[in-house]
Length: 257
Image (cartoon, rainbow, N blue to C red; front, side, top):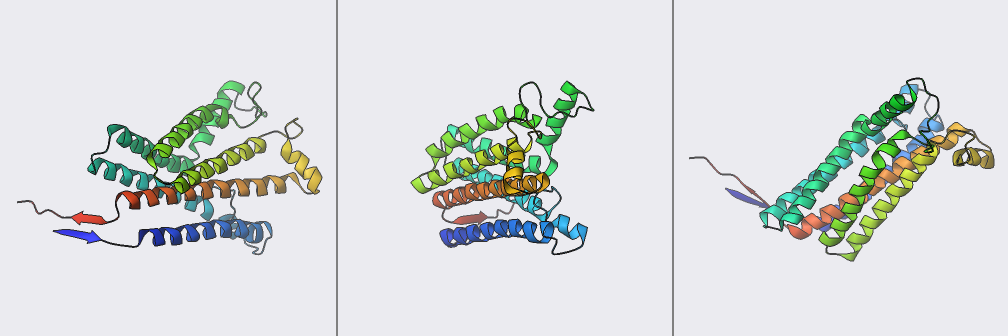
């Protein structure tokens, strides 16, 4: 038995984009009001809306969205394989699938942060106060993982530029990677120790007349928003490409003799 599912893909994807962006903006506003502004006295509730914590609702949303992005890349692999696409295309979508699923795992487990902490403890000792290793002044995870993330990012830019059929989709991919680069730069300055020549957040504290903790918190919240929005853009691009390659979804059940 075969069943075909027909739906208005472009309209649903546009509505999904509006919904995702609205939720991400609400996370930022909720953090600023309920958490930082203390609209609610309960500490556990405020922590639930804290964008910078890994056990808040925004973190769950980000992990889930990245997971769905990975599943969409997997569907694109299946479609390309079913259409007998070139081996290089299948390999490309397989790599993207594994990378996005890994990123969901990484975000949910703090994998790169924990490995970075382990490397720092191995090099500097368990009780080291300094975040710097050699001349690198920020978080150790960047020193360890950025070559890997950067290489995969360049591959994705090249592959999606070759695979996507619309200029708009290609520009959205570039915009998404631009947002991720800004987020990484923000995280780099977050890891700079107070008083360092590159202590941007310390300078902002003086310029704004506020506390360093508040500057770091809002910067971290903004960084998390950039990462979520970047993943939203990539998900929308992949969904549009999936609809382009496979406008209808056919489900087939076969009874074994």
